Image (tube, rainbow, N blue to C red; front, side):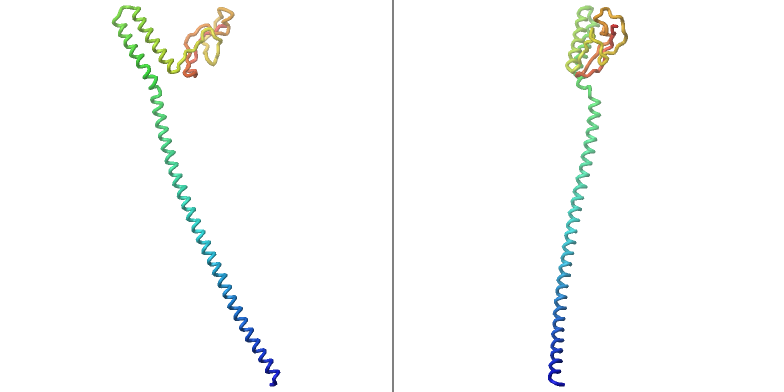
Length: 202
């Protein structure tokens, strides 16, 4: 084999070694890059998992707090409803207590007037006693907001009056007006609680 052939083979051999070394380096670089990429992905996945676990824990905590608040709110509302119902029943039962208390003095005066009627023969004294009892009764009821309705000779108003009958008006001015009042009407704190029963002129 001549010198040129030997040089060519040596060149090929050297090139082959160089190529093998380049391939090995490339492989090592590839493996290193791949390993780094895989590690990075693994770290990302672990971070994501940790974030998801933290999010799940936060959501679970918020759900537990919300549930606790809801249970407390339901319990408070139930207690409020029971307390309100009890107060309403007591209010209905004792609604007239204030008025009854204020009428007790009138009842005492009535008892004294009755005793006086049984023991006294003086008609004038008995009348005065009864008049005083009636006056005290009216004043007590008026202090609680009761007002007597003035209907006599006023225009007939179906919002205030209940017409029992109609009669010929004694004068032209009384036509369509209340000629007589059979039963008085009353209002309590400006609310009609009994309509006046009247006779209307026609």
